[in-house]
Every structure is written in structure tokens, then in C-alpha cells.
Length: 368
Image (tube, rainbow, N blue to C red):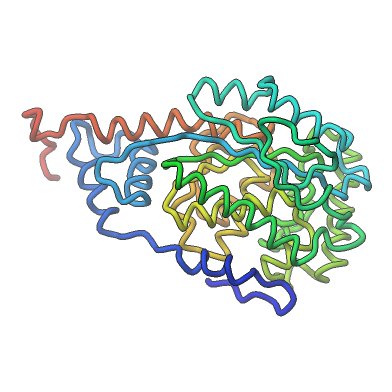
């Protein structure tokens, strides 16, 4: 269903034009992809989800001989005022420290990006520090961290639009550079709280069912985290389980700058027909908002993995997206998404390079 935006939280006209430009999938490509897969020298459906991934990519890219070019992972970083409430096991200072680690090549995402041949783009959307023009960093700061959403809205309407535009602009740049497949990741102490709040408000599920341990909270602090998020949602939206607030109101009130930028990247990539691999819980929160704003963007999204965060499964089910991997990960950074690059490329090589029954002279199965 198309989102009906509230009077006080609207996207800029420029962003609305991007949303309006996203085309639905052409069923002809879906059918031709399936015909190709069914003609390959294997029992029907025997490659399982590899076949689904290949067909999805073919239909999205509208390429009967699909290829992957210019793989990259965009790691959006931002801080969260909600950390003032003690919802994280780590201090806010870890966010800029990890950004420097990304730039130095020492984080898990750097290792996996090197392994898969993907370029890494680190984007400062709202980190609470001054990076003084650090080389290699994409400087797109909206503000030095969101406000504490337990006490006030996390961002203004203008800030929300600016963060969405950051993601759209980077997706446009990716398309202009010839990239056909990108991964989205994030870094931000406190952002599991924001993602949990977004998930609860979008789905109407109780916060207590969605709250995980994030960066390593013990049970007592985890319960307190859930209580803080629940109270914040009631402050902003009343009975959020039934009021079902609008997606942009949700993002403005509780979201992070990096989560909004991820939503913008999903929208921008969809408009340019670039396939997007989302990482875990936080990325999925941004993607879920994008899919409410533009349901036709969903077929361009591949879920890299299923996180250990309890809210992640709920979000993916609400989006109708099946994760490719399940490795009990909860690191973020885009690690699960980049791991999935190899699976996607394998699926496409099978699609392109396997012989058909006709070309190989292999007998097909007898009709039942």
C-alpha cells in the first residue's frame, strides 16, 4: 500500500520524484529468467535459493545475460542521542573510533571487502566528532548525532530529508560509475535501539518482543532498554501497537541519520535499477521504511543474512524478503551483506554458464 504521509513530515519534492520514478518489475523478465533456469541441466528447482537469487537479479536488472560490475559496500555512520539513557554497552566514542578503523582497513568489513573484491565507502552522516577532512571518508554530516528520542524527536524534518538525500545521491553516483550491485552497512553506537523503535512502530509488535542485546547488554540492562524504547514510542505516538504511525514520522522521531541515509540509498538504487544487498537489523529498518514509501523498490533488495537480533526476523517477514545466509552474526558494518556477494555471483555464473538440456544433448525428465 502506498504510504499516506502526515502533514508535518513530508519528503522534499526532489525525493518524491525519485520515489515516483521507481518502476515495478517487468513480468516478462521474470518469466524468461525462470524458463532459462528450468532449461539448465539439473532437476527443476534443485539449486534452491540460488535460482531465486539469479531470477531476482535478472528481473531487476532486465538483463538476460546478467553481470555484476563495480561491487561496493557503503558503510553509513552516525551517533544517537538515545545513548544518554544507557542503552548500549559501549560508549558513544566507539563510533568515531570504528570509523577510523574502517579507514585504516582493520575492521571485519575491510577484510571481507578485500576478499570479495568490493570497494568500501565509509560515509559520515552524523558522527559526533569532527573528522577534520580525514582522507578516504565521505563527509556528508547532517549533525553531530541525533537528539535523544526518549525526550524529543531524533531529527527535524529538514534533517530527515537531508539524510535521505545523502543516500539517494550516493546511489546516483554508484549508478553513474557503472555499479550494478552494492551492499549497505552501518556503524553507530545506539542504533539497535533506533532500529527496534522503528520496527515496533512499523509492525505494531511490542518492544519487549523485539529488543536484543545489541553490543552485549546483560539481561537486566536489556529489559531496561526495552522499557526506555517503549516509553519513548508512547511519548511520540501514543498506543503505537494500534496507532500505526506513518513511516516518515517514525524515522524523524526515533531514527538515526545513518538509517535514514540507508533508506535513501535503497530508494535511489531502485530508481537506477542497481541491486542492493542489505546487511542486518539496522539496515533492514532503513530498507523497511523505504519499502513502505515505495513498495516497488522491494524486488531490488536482497537480504544478506538473518541477524541474531530478534527484531530482524520480524522486519524481513514484514518486507517479504528471505535472507540468503544464517550465520548467527550481529556485527553490522555490512559484513553479512558483503559475504553474500559470493553467493550472488555464484548464482549468476550458474545461470549464465550451465549448459541447457538442448545444448548438452541431455534428456529431460519425463512428464508426470
